[in-house]
Length: 59
Image (tube, rainbow, N blue to C red):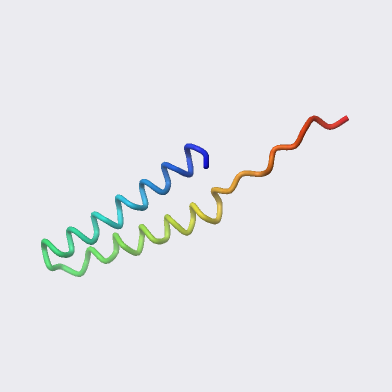
């Protein structure tokens, strides 16, 4: 896993956790948007974060 993918997963976890905590603390369901955005970020990281296999030099 490369650094960009690790950062994307960290951002995903932070946004989802912030959404859940703020929703519980304030009781306002508007923070469900954070959860949705966090899930979308995770899906984007999963789909686009894969690296191509390294190949040796071509002759």
